[in-house]
Every structure is written in structure tokens, then in C-alpha cells.
Image (cartoon, rainbow, N blue to C red; front, side, top):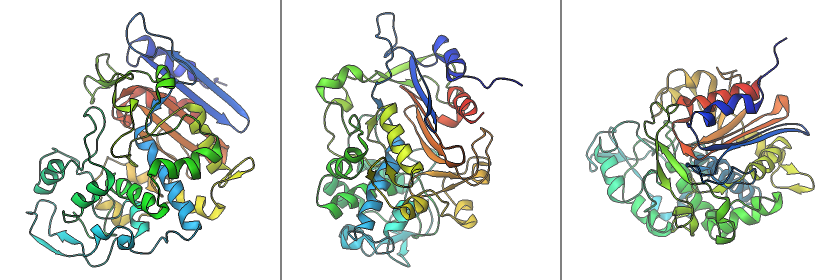
Amino acid sequence: MTRPPSLRDALSPYVDRGVVPGAVALVARGADVEEVALGAMAEGPSAAPMRRDAIFRIASMTKPMVATAAMSLVEQGKLSLDEPVDRLLPELANRRVLRSIGAPLDDTVPSPRPITVRDLLTFRMGFGIVWGPPDGTPIQRAEAELLLGAFGPPSPQRPPAPDEWMRRFGSLPLMHAPGESWAYNTSAEVLGVLVARAASKPLGDVLEERVFGPLGMKDTGFFVPASKIDRLPVAYFAGDPFHPDTPGSRVDDPAAGGQWARPPAFPSAGAGLVSTADDVLAFGRMLLGKGALGRARVLSPASVDAMTHDHLTDGQKAVSEMKPDGWWDSHGWGYCMAVNTATDDLGRQAGSYGWDGGLGTSWGNDPARAMTAILLTQRAAFPAMSGIYRDFWKAASA
């Protein structure tokens, strides 16, 4: 019988070849934890060794953490899944919808219904990233001019504060009618503003109070304080993101003095958090525990079940803006995260769930194996095209 590859076996070749400067990986199967810290905090011979408690920019792994806070507000009655968001986001009342994705901004029809909280959680609000040239349509150009798009390395953060962001966003029509299709990212940013308004607190405070504090996630937040900045690796972007397994990169965030060294004007619910392997492990174990970690209960089992099951119809998947070949054959979408509807080509089983961060990170839970798996690197690339990502998941799922 062939021994499954260890995390060190799977990841070391990428560090040795200079594909990534360093990596921290962790796989917990029940109480059994395998972890490894490889390489260095930056490129170059004088860089400090990578450390287990390194703080990484987790990008879109932020999304399910914000969804957790939203569901805690639902449980307390401060939000309701099927209520229109207009109550707290009046900027989104009386939406209009483009006749087609490439139509002029004034070629619209009235929205058939309001946007709901559930639409935000399932990414069916009717607005999101259009896959293709960033200036290919009038709505994309308007979004860029208003500084509303996805942000962070490789572009510096530039969006305005939440209320101004929402005012600008409310000036645009929707790309699709609410509930019609799935579209990536923007729903999470709107959800972050909604959560803050529902709790009458800044988003970072809401997350600390409802998620990070109870779970002991002491190093997770929207920026790294000066006392911890030595634990933040330098961030890089692959020289060729379509061939991410070849050496060659450029600095995108220098750690000290960089984007995450200070509080952001806009705390991005889509991609703004930093965290560590142990903090993400606590979050993952809470979900495996049906909302509880030790004596700390963050959510009810019913809320966790709702978050981790597929909410999309085949029709919504078919017309979604993201159509990677075959991806929807084995995946669906829960609340701000992917769920496996069948075993995929990396060995992740039906019932698994999680999400990746475009700055070089990945997290997932497999309830059938009582497993949480976490990969953290500081080199951004398209995860599904990255060998280190694929080899990590194959090792974790073996």
C-alpha cells in the first residue's frame, strides 16, 4: 500500500524551486494535526524563516467569516434572510436592471423584486465580477470609475468608506435581476456594509465580538498592528498568473508600510482579512462542531447547515458569470463559500465546503473525515491553476 504524501513532501518542491517563498499548511483530522512551515517570509538570502504563526492575507477566505457574523445577526432577529435589504440599505431600493450585460447604463427595466439578505449570502443579488477584459462593458467601466470593484494586490486599495461606497454603488443598475444567476464577490462587499449597519458597529468590531473573540482568533482582523508586523510575510504576485508554477514574481505588498499595516478606509468583507493557520483552524473546527468550539457557541446547528449546503439551481449555475469547465459539475454555493456536491478531481468529497483566497491561500472542511485543511502562502495566483494548491489538496484528501 502506497503511503499518502506528507504535507512536506507535497509542498517542498514548490519552495525549493522558488515558486513560492514560503508556506504554512495544516491538516487536522479530529485531534490529529499535521502541520508544516516551509521556506521564508520573503524572497532573498537574508529573509527570516517562515513561521507557524505567520499572518497571511487570506483574501476571499474572508467571505465565510462575514457570513458567520451575518447568520448570528439572523439568529438574534436583527436580520431576516428573506427581508429586502432596503430597510438598512436604502441606497438599494427601487433597483433597475440592465437589459443585457453589455447595454448602456440607461437601457434598463425595473427589477422584478427587491434584493434580499439571502440573495447577498448566496451571491444572487444580480451584480458581480464579469469574467473577461476589465473594461469590456459600460457597467464595468462605470464600476471602475467609481472605485467599486475588487481590490487589493495587485492593485492598491482605493475604495471610499462604507457609506460613500454604498452611495456610489446605489447609483448603478444591476447586471441581472435578483435571484436570476450567481455572480462573484460584490454581494460579499454589500453584505459587509449590511452587517455593520445591522449591528450599529464597524464591521471589524462586529467580527471580533461575534466570531474572532469567542473562537480565540487573536490574530485575525483587517490590518496587522505594529507589534505583529514582523509576522506578516512580504506578498508577491506571480509574474505569469496563467503559469503560476514557474518562478518569477513581483512585490505587491511589502508588509511594513504596506496596505495591511494600517486600518483600511473600507473593511472589505470580500477580501480584506489577515489571519493565521491556527485562527483559521479554530474557525473550521467551529463549523465542524455545528457552530460550537469547546464551550463557545457562535451559531446554531441549523445556521451551519444552511451555510454549508448548495443553494443554487442548475439554471442559476448555467447562466452564472463564472463558468470554469466542469466546476459546477461537482460544486455548488452555500453562504459565501463553495460546497462539494460530488467528489472533485482533487479528492474532496460531497459534503465538503470552504473557499480559496486569491492572494495564495485555501481552506476547506470535510465533515465525513472530521477534517479541516489549510494552505497559506504569500504568492498570489489563480488557485485552480496552481500546482501547489492542487498537490496540497490531493495530499490532504488522500
